[in-house]
Each structure stands twice: as structure tokens, then as C-alpha cells.
Length: 152
Image (tube, rainbow, N blue to C red; front, side, top):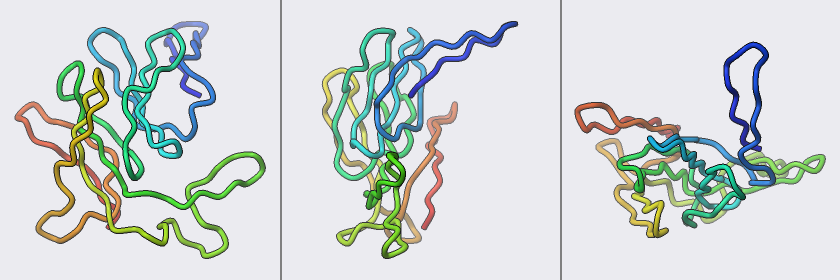
């Protein structure tokens, strides 16, 4: 569930979306529109006050996002997880084999996503140290640099 919290006394809570899967990486556009990645359902959600809308569907597992323009984003994609149902909730791990990588795992990547039209373009899947393992949270700096974490 995505909740907008307004810091006042008392705190105000607005539910922006429910039943979305395993969401992370929210970004807020200049117009107040919120987008979030959904690791479990491999999508990018648009949460603008009405019903949640699928802005894009991606391969792998989107794990973090940064806006480039009001309608485009760079998404960190960790390449995928095996999912396990525990107590009615899905978790990104295979508890039988004790791994968080699916059998066909080949690494993660960065991709460009058109949030208005849904087009997805893979940008980069390796750096000087080799193939990305699990790109995650990312940010664009004021000089045009892209910073992200990679668990590998």
C-alpha cells in the first residue's frame, strides 16, 4: 500500500494505492504525481489520486527509480527474484533453496522507461567490475551523474 503522510499535527494519511504487490522506489513529479516500482508484478505504477494505473511493464524486477523528465525515468532492475508465499504475503526469496536468485538469473541492468507511453529500453548491464548483480536505489545528481547501488 502506498500512503502519503502530511506532516502536521495531527498527521494526515492519504492512501494512494492498495493491492499493488511489492512496491518500492517512489518518486514524486513536479505535478505531484507519484510513480513506484512493483518488484513482484514487474511494473511501474502511476498513483495520481485516482485508481492506480500501470505506467509500464518491465522484464526482470524493477527495484529503484529516478525521474529524468516528468514523463521518463531511469529504473534499476535487479534481474528477478524467486518468490515465496509466507502467511499470505509474498517474499523475494526461495526459502527451500535459500537463495534470492531465480534459476535463470543472468544479472541486473539499468533501463529507461517512458512513463507516459510505457516503452522500456535497456541501457546498461555491466560496469568496469563486470555484470551487475542487483542494481537498486538510484539518484540523478545536478551534474547529470547517475548514482546507484549494486549488491554484487
